[in-house]
Amino acid sequence: MHRPNYQPATSPPLHHPVPQHVSTVPMMRSPPPPVTQSTPQSHYGGQYQPQQQGGSQIPAAYNGFLNDQTAQMGFQVGKSAVMAGQTYVEQNITRWVDLTALKHYFNVSNKYVLQKLLLVLFPWRHKPWSRKQALHASGETMTYFLPPREDPNSPDMYIPVMAFVTYILLSTVLAGLRGAFHPELLGMTATTALAIVLLEIAGLKLGVYLLSISNESQLLDLVAYSGYKFVGIIVVLIVAELLNAGQGTGGWAGWSVFAYCFAANAFFLLRSLKYVLLPENSADRNTVNRSQRNRRTQFLFVYSYVVQFFFMWLLTRQEAPKKRLPN
Image 1 (spheres, rainbow, N blue to C red):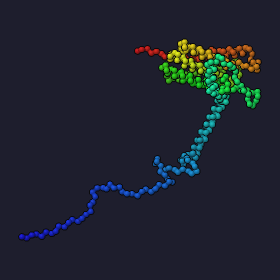
Image 2: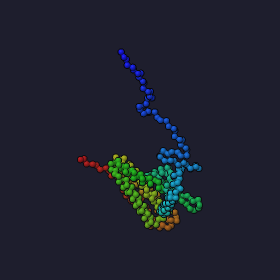
Image 3: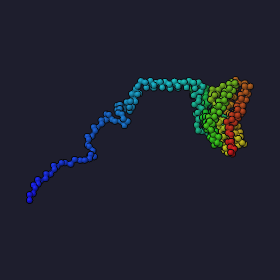
Image 4: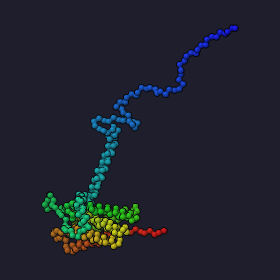
């Protein structure tokens, strides 16, 4: 039996395996070149300008702005405007008010403020009422009044200004507690109080002019004395509000407190304004005759009692809250 010849099978050639997916091994790259200190990178996307040598900490961009001619011209214009404003204020305000003399009225201390408040509220047994004077260092015959810090009889501006502001705020607060507050009340109260003060000063100035009364610090003294009534007005508002249980300043309690504060303020003004309207030295007495002195005394009485009663009553009016009718 014939057997066929079988040739040996040849094996296929060997091949290296080919990867069938992308390698995830990161490719190695060379590091970036180092950044020199002369050109640091900015966090805001721009290059930072190097600082100038010599201790200056201003960046170059701002330094260029300061050295710009337009900026320098603007600085000069602003400086000239400020100087012109100061000159205008000095020339116009000093025409009406002596700033040097005004500082004298704010030269106060805590002791003086306490003594003055007690004097305004309890003036009955106070003596003497004359103001203290001292000699100038330049001349023996020239005298001047001591500041309020050293003389409790000297008028000041601190207490009247603080009492004026306190009255405005206190009136609005009490109105709010009674449920009668509205946004326009603060402005109306301030306007009314300021108008009364200006009207009072204008009346005083007119009376002083008609009576031919001359005094170096006359206007500032009158302004100071016209503001002391706000101390008594504040006492009336607080005490009457507590005694009347929030029903305003009416009733026997409110009128009793008002009567005392009015009498104390009138007596205080009558004694304090005496040196302004009625001269005490012999030289002034010789120039003022009896009839003129009587007219000054009558004017002082009318101002201290009649005028002050009307203004204090007008400023202390606090109406009781209106009762709402049930629906």
